[in-house]
Amino acid sequence: MKAVLCSSFTGPADLRLGEIDEPKPAGDEILIDVHAASVSFMDRLLVSGLYQMRPPLPFVPGTEASGVVVAVGDKVTKFSPGDRVACSSWTGGYAERMIAKESKSVRLPDGVAFETAATVLHVYGTADYALVERARAQRGETVFITGAAGGVGLAAVDLGRHLGLRVIAGVGSDDKAALVRSYGAGEVINYRSGDLRERIKSVTSGQGIDIGFDNIGGAIFEQMARLMAWGGRLMPIGFTGGAIPSIPMNLPLLKNYSILGVFVGAWAERFSDEAARMNDTLMQLLADGKIRPHIDRILPLEAAADAMRAVANRTVQGRIVLKIR
Image 1 (cartoon, rainbow, N blue to C red):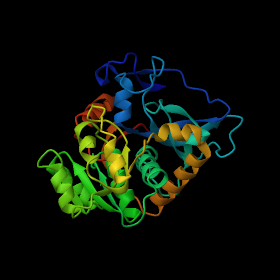
Image 2 (image 1 turned 45 degrees about the vertical axis):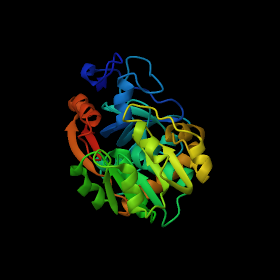
Image 3 (image 1 turned 90 degrees about the vertical axis):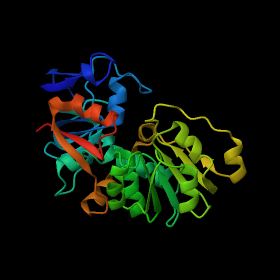
């Protein structure tokens, strides 16, 4: 079967489309005819050797996909051949067939397209775990979301609107403002122009932010640490800017705010039943039109490397999807 192969941790440029043997599902796994796979920043980190885990080489990238079940392991009870599903996995999505854990797969409601379904579990799962499970967000609270036009950021804007939060979106260029406003951001701040601290103070009337949802890291996170409201929750989601931040710990002490780590992949491994229920909830929200993933563009499988480069260069709003069938 056709698959994109990573044979060295040297980045997207060295990915190759090739032929590999079809994977075989273990007892708790399902085998899927992949119709669509989304492209994430995490995928790019994995093929570049920059993620906190390194799969054995060679491997097929792709952390999220959708398709039709063709076989199931002997311990699987939720799925049968012919079921339409979306799934998440550490690897395997950029191929004609992939395997996924039963606990990390979800049945698609009628009417949900494969392309859209392939963009939900990772980004909306991260947003839901962060806002609902970790921050315990309450209607009316103010959340500041950085990288707000990217995959995870835009999902957080969309879900924040659904939860009744006041959403302030942080973007790196003005051309992204219209999209995040259309997804529910009441205020948009370009943190590459002007003083972030002064803008946040202005739009919150000096009260600061209840929830900080940071995808960027580095200096932006360090500034956010000085902008929290009393009893707030500051969450590092990722470090797409490349720098791990460091902050003086007297800052959370003075305002009694919390710093909450968010690693939904590790949580899903430890609490698979809870993660499966979250996935079911997200798919129902999608079917009901209460969340609406944004697809930047749809490309063929052989364009996977170009898609990863676009993600790395921050020219993507929402998600790129690879159409495989």
